[in-house]
Image (cartoon, rainbow, N blue to C red; front, side, top):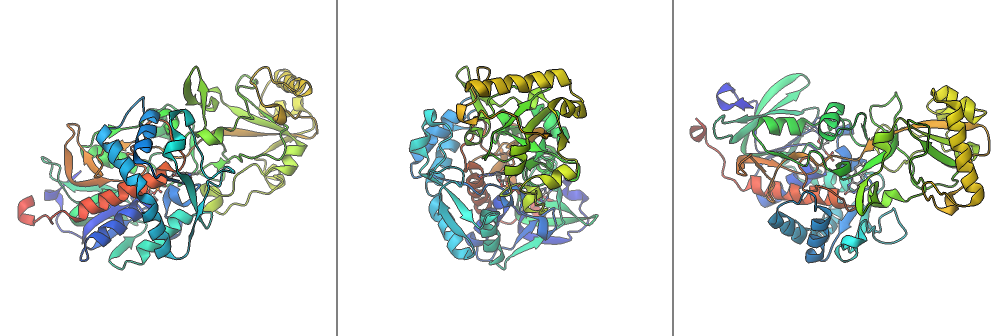
Length: 508
Ligand SMILES: Cc1cc2nc3c(=O)[nH]c(=O)nc-3n(C[C@H](O)[C@H](O)[C@H](O)COP(=O)(O)OP(=O)(O)OC[C@H]3O[C@@H](n4cnc5c(N)ncnc54)[C@H](O)[C@@H]3O)c2cc1C
């Protein structure tokens, strides 16, 4: 923290300072603005304007809509059983969730450039029930997504912010520190760095930190989650700044190591040209492909619809992360049929396709040409290029092809309809790496989005919202993160703007 005494002069001032121009930051700004007709609000964002918007901008846009607070409370409680959030927080969150549909509809009507569509975009039904045994069907009324895809939810929120002239922005201006009383920890402002220059900004009523998680910081992935190498699907800007700043500010941390970081560890394709990872496609036209781990053997049922459970699979009565992260390096092996008929990546979400604008070729031929996908005439030659044992890889493919001939996969129970042999040369391989949707670790907070210290007391004038310090602690139901970003952002905006302004004499 920077102490108030170290500030010689304030470079700018505002009533409420919000760090992060994602869905949570937007929700906070809109709420603060609408709760006080005189308040000045400033959003500071690390990225330039054209790269702002965080994970929400490149997300699947799926929103969880619930009409039953009691059922939603019970469902979320069951999904959080290994690390339950406080019961009163859970109940109030569920109550607000059951009323969120009207808020979302109002924002879309106000923005005027987006459209709410019932359905997940993922399944033929209107809802994805991730964990029916915990009560999903009563809790989830439906999933919704917002057109245009990509970006509909964030475009809606950003447009609503832009319609409010009392909300100011500063891009390329990351939050780097908070200004506090070293004894009481009360927050008086923030230090923001704009193009290499550190500026002190007085926040008369409060600061809201909504800067996303730590998915783009490999070191934090290793230390908090234990993943040796995991890459973000979303923005490269979410490097854990909020965790570090709030830790320094005296906050208690929570949810730093959720199962699969709740959003799951997805199969991704990392190429040297981009800092983030491509999301592998989910729905296949042809199925003559397998994956092998470090020991050149298959290790799971590649035909399982794991995207419906955020890459959790059930073992011994428990939902656990899929094994990719612990059996690597993993290669996906496929034949010419797969190459021709399945673009290997998803275009609708992920930073590389949505923001960087990379258009992966439909038949993967460009990426074969770039060397991102390895090609050979035989499986053994392919294995050699990968630095793997040709005999072992050949045996793994032969064993899988025999299972296809029998119509039954005794090893992993891959469904019969997906048992197509790797039979049409040439053959291909691409490395599959762990891809992270988001992390929910951060400062512990309450339902007002106030940041808590290790004794459970709110740190005065300090709030947090969104994925950073999310309430989600274990299993995850589709559409919960974006809606939680709205709920926690709104709570933070409301709570901060209603505080009386601090006076210089009070802080002296
Ligand atoms: C591929 C993908 C698919 C997803 N699909 C869904 C889905 O379908 N449904 C769902 O509910 N959730 C989904 N999620 C999760 C969801 O997008 C996030 O949980 C949500 O966007 C979090 O919102 P946020 O505002 O907290 O963070 P973000 O949206 O990440 O925004 C954080 C902002 O803070 C900025 N920032 C970072 N550091 C600083 C700093 N020091 N100072 C100032 N600004 C900073 C970033 O640039 C960014 O603009 C998905 C995520 C990904 C990556």
